[in-house]
Image (cartoon, rainbow, N blue to C red; front, side, top):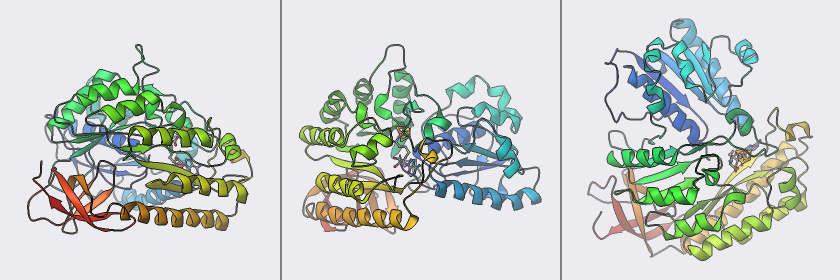
Length: 454
Ligand code: SAH
Ligand code: SF4
């Protein structure tokens, strides 16, 4: 899952339990889409008891920070924000300051010492703890279970969102040697299939036309549930929801990327021609030490199979450069694999040791400059490949789901998740428009609308 530092407040879809109390909340979120979804849940809880969102922390009656520690750089941003808030806390000691997200461990002693001005720490599985600083929530105990899990990214102020993200499985059962997620998010826990389908129906009623199902290992969905439904089964049920136009899911683990899931996506009316399949490295020895449990060939074969079933599919992946002991030759294997595979999007990260993980016990022996160099080499490769891929799109038409205006131009994504901008005098928010591509760049396409918006 990718990181996006946005503040997103979910609009209410049902009346609040308690009338407005004049109090305001401020939520600051960094990290993956799962954090965005958790922040939405906190927002929904507070709205339920009469609070309203504010974009200004100085106006807030409660401040919640939702943290990410997947890399040191994210952790540093959280610490920076927490230190900044010390001023606010000095001026308004009565405003509770709450920290949640992956920075919060079960042992909170050290956190308490480092950030003594934080009133409450709660880990992302323990939303009920908010009651300690918002006592009104205690009247809602049972209703907290009913609160939505989804979040609606803010696309354009004042207009309803056309896309929604819905968590379907929490946690992760893998133990990749570099990764802190399983330590902070616990074991895989799938949500019941009917709850998810109901939530899709609910967001579609508010105007959403595209849904992305979320999980750290989203394609492992269902194995822990009594009747062991699969992701493919869930996709088939969600596809039936009238009004839904597009369906995506992320993040998949290569080991669980079954033929059945791929065939189902290829078959379904709403299944988008896009696959997000992190590989992390292109060398088998590095993959083994990362404890990824698959080989480079398996990943490449899964991509090849997907392309046979869905010829237009676009592929996104994640890569870590500078893993402990990664030699020049091993890095060259990653380069070679990406060169052969032509991904549309590669999320690149420089290895960052995370305390408590297996690889943190190994020497972080690739110097920062070398990590940076490898990062740049892959960035260059990506720019070249995306230029080629996008040039081939010139003159072709793509269905774009318009998310809103950006710098005066309509902006949306194709089914393959490519960003498209175009000019048009009509109000096209939330519409599906066919756009013929007239100009390209490595990172987006420009075009003109053809035919009637739907
Ligand atoms: N569940 C997903 C990834 C979750 S973490 C998967 O299995 O791929 C999101 C991304 O952060 C990862 O794909 C990885 O590229 C990056 N990441 C995780 N731990 C990291 C670390 N210690 N250093 C650098 N990047 C890391
Ligand atoms: Fe982390 Fe690996 Fe789980 Fe992804 S699959 S969340 S990288 S442990």
